[in-house]
Length: 369
Image (cartoon, rainbow, N blue to C red; front, side, top):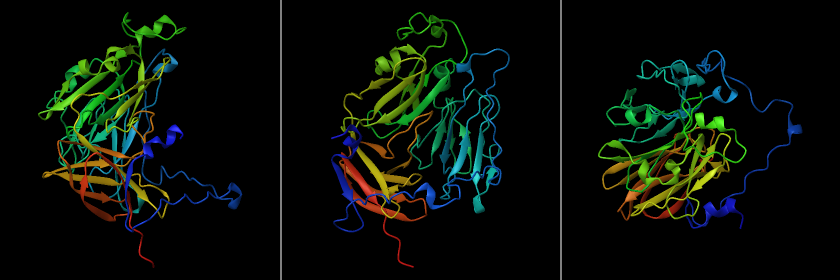
């Protein structure tokens, strides 16, 4: 079996009708089928006028002149994906998706506008209130109509301030039911050389001036605690880290980490956190379209607590992941209810799913016209 198929092993299939098999994707049309272009730029028509600025002036090295990331997030819960873009010199920008496919700049009204040196962005339900919060080493908590800077309240700023974060990801490292935070760091401008920095063979010594340690924060009691001491070589190594990706490589319910470097090796880390809790992994699949439902929201209710995640195939900075959502359940034997909010507005509920399962949820077929 090819490694790409490993993540499909052991799936518990949940379908709207008994005996359904996952359909093969429809064949793609030949480029000769039509003369019209497959993609059309609508940036200006949609009202998006963002332009990234690197914030660097004067002389610089090419590795210091890097673009940044963004996120598609339904921050106001109206069923439309909104757009968040990270900047490195001016304010980050939040565009609200209005009717007619137009986007309106709601940065100031939403309480955003961080003028820090932004790179990656992560989205997750950090406080367990059903709203999606976001983080770029500044933590913004979603209040519904806007965001509030909660960096200090969650004790995140002090330890992350000295470093340049790229890959940023929320995930439940020990499956205890709340989200933890991992940040991949590496400078974009030369700083004091770090003698402990590890360089690959043949890499010039000046790269020590870009190396920084990564950071791992564990959530406990409504705050983030710097527990980089628990992450082993993932945070002990001092390198020029860039992107990080999460996935359950050995199918044991724990999210593993793939880390890439600038001018250095890729590194793979298996999650071996002790006393991990139970878990549930969900895949939202639309059989009519023959694809995963990227953008779908999934709510999981257990013991009166609701957690939310969004189906996505990307992770923070320059990274792609499986379009599955992962929930840590602590000691719960299962979940009381799962609600899938499909991108077209259809809502589907499943009751009483057991823990420690991989579940494929099939979207109900649309009624015949």
